[in-house]
Length: 99
Image (cartoon, rainbow, N blue to C red; front, side, top):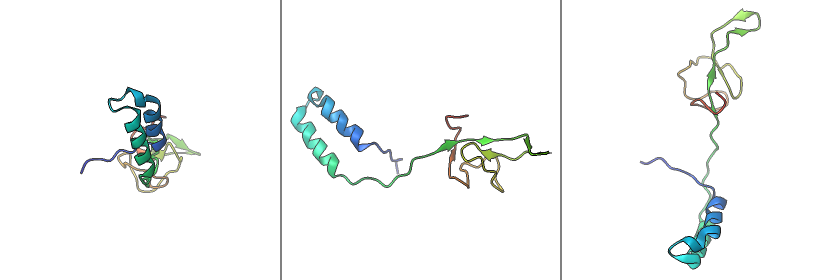
């Protein structure tokens, strides 16, 4: 099964409203598409939080080699740098924008 992609309904409607006359089918067809877009039920999706594992050199007075999440800053038990999601906050460990 192909991976699903989701778009914002308002952005699609805006595109048809502002550029409708540029399409081959014209403004009337775009208005029909806008009407149909408004009737499609919204998908139940959650925004993905991107993060990465940070390897600290010290916590308090002791030296440690334990990864922690760059998003929630928690040190989860039993994970390593190869774990793809933070078990505490659910962030996807794919590097994130803040790496």
